[in-house]
Each structure stands twice: as structure tokens, then as C-alpha cells.
Image (cartoon, rainbow, N blue to C red; front, side):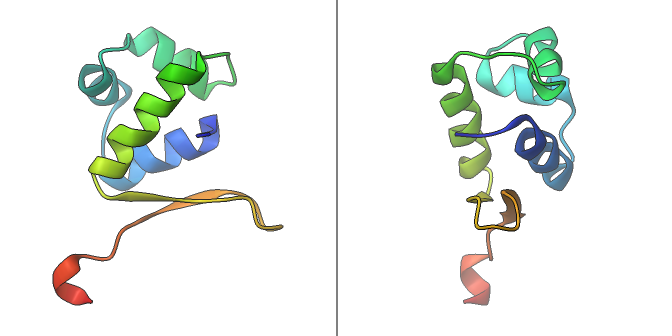
Length: 79
């Protein structure tokens, strides 16, 4: 499940504001801001945020001893 740190990093990769993300997932910007500061968020909303980022090309890197992370997917034409 997406962490607050991954949420901030994914937004940065896409150059999205908290308001941009909130609009795309129909969650208030206040809720996004609170989550990114470490506040609670329902699992369903966290999944929705993760799916929205994935559709935009973000790949989530699971915890592997070096910490969880994010990156942009390689464009299909570059494979």
C-alpha cells in the first residue's frame, strides 16, 4: 500500500500539486495534505491514489531492504 513518502515522491515525478491529485481521485486536498504529513487514510483511498499514479506511469518499488520508492515507467517505445 502506498506510503505518504511514496505519495509525495510520485506527485513530484509527475509535477502534480496536492490539488491536482485531489481532483483526479475525488478526495479533498486537505485529506491528501494530512496523509502526506503522516495522517491516517482509509485503505480504499490509498489504493485509489496508487492506481491513479500507476495509470499516469508511476511504478511503485516495494520495500527491499533499501526502502520503498517510486520511479516512472519506461516508455513502451523505448523497450
